Length: 372
Image 1 (cartoon, rainbow, N blue to C red):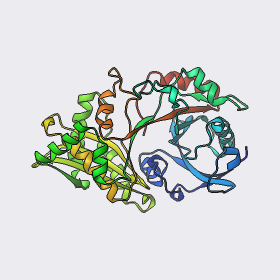
Image 2 (tube, helix red, strand yellow):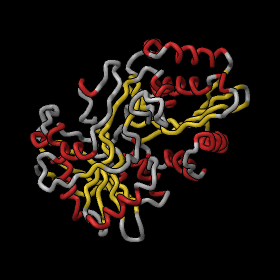
Image 3 (spheres, rainbow, N blue to C red):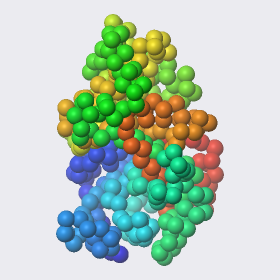
Image 4 (spheres, helix red, strand yellow):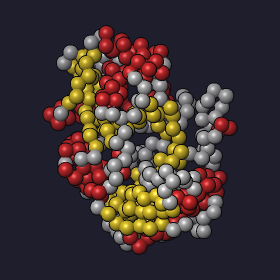
């Protein structure tokens, strides 16, 4: 396999439904002090075992972000990248070649490359689901590494100890009309949407002046669920970066559900290419019987359709309906909207410095959570 790589400006990144691979997201991270670089690559489709419109080559790009471990060392992190997905049997070879090709383009002291792959998990065949259609999950780490490294030269791809972005999500198909989308939902979800409307819940699109309302609900949600808390400035940057000329490939909306003048729930809805993503959500502990979160999701779906999106990514659930999983409640709520669960490969590392990588792995075992 021969991959041709060259640098490009992050502002020139191709349009993509993957928010974390957009110029917008690079701008957000830059304003938070996180550097990034964009690369364009070209590879023969025969090497990828792809048939793309009869073309001989695939030309695509990706953005990598530098997650510093100390003043010198860093991880080159590819959130949901690269987007191009080779055939399953050729994915390890592709990642190895890409990693080796990138060595000379990255600044010194790179400990490892981390690919947060949004490619479908290899373990999603018919036999990987039980009789009720629930996913059995992935095999142990050793077997996963054997599978992905098969055919590589260096056998250097390692399954990460944690996934930095959700590797299980639910996608709602927006190509249907509103009536058909409602019909695909679970009866209880449809009922709760109607109930919220009958009780007078109103969803409004908010501007920067309402960021404090969002943040109050967010802090309440984080305290209720023992979640990591980001500062208000983080959300201000996410919201305001959308209007920068350098990041005009994405639209960000804040939606807030009210009962009269009282805010009950809120969300960040991000629209990129043909996809809408439910990126962040928050809700009050009060008046939960008014089902404001259902009204919020339904309004987001309608808004996404109005923007021409064909899919709605509900962004993060438990891999299956296991009541012991900490995200089981989120799974039940999101699954009710009639989407299809999508299982991804998650994080894979390609170490460049074995000794420092071992230290990094040990550190990660003591920390958890998504890194957006």
